[in-house]
Image: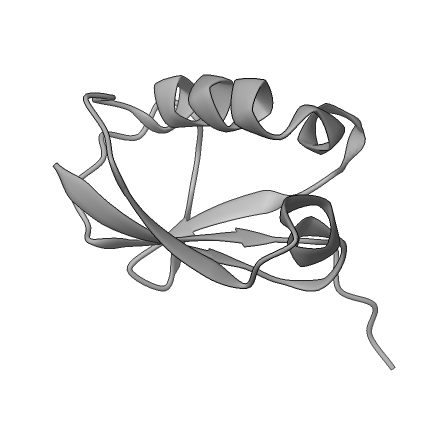
Length: 77
């Protein structure tokens, strides 16, 4: 399955890109994250949430969407 990954803030700094497309065999978000941790070692130390098709998801969520975003914590004001 081909998905688009979008990175924001400190996550984009770690990956050195704002977006990429990858082919994956992962079925759930946790499997995708393991793949990304092996590709981008610095992600392990970052706090972030995952959104699929613009909705926040948990690690056990099934990958169903074409767009997944890694979102760093946002500060309100």
